[in-house]
Image 1 (cartoon, rainbow, N blue to C red):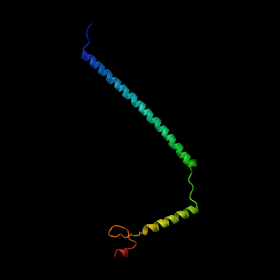
Image 2: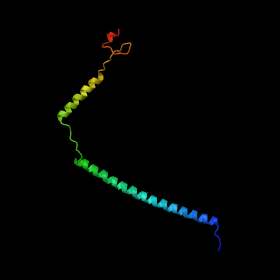
Image 3: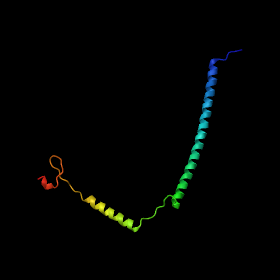
Image 4: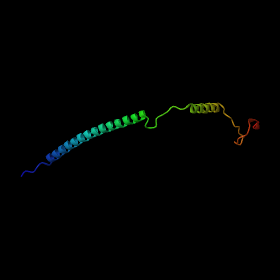
Length: 106
């Protein structure tokens, strides 16, 4: 019986390894594509269901504010805008403490 050349065995095993790796890569690619497709369709259904629920008012539909709420909101806005323009400056003494009035520093 003739002995098989070790180089031939290594080439054959390397070729089998390369073919197995290519087959595995193709299988993983196909599985990944199917998973992405399934995820895409599931996500689309979830978004569609959420939009339908929002449209039907199931998820706490929004109602416009009543006139009293609008008046209170306007009062708060007016008060806030007046407070922003009025800045009271507190005077400080040379030691860094606050004084009651600016003339106390003079």
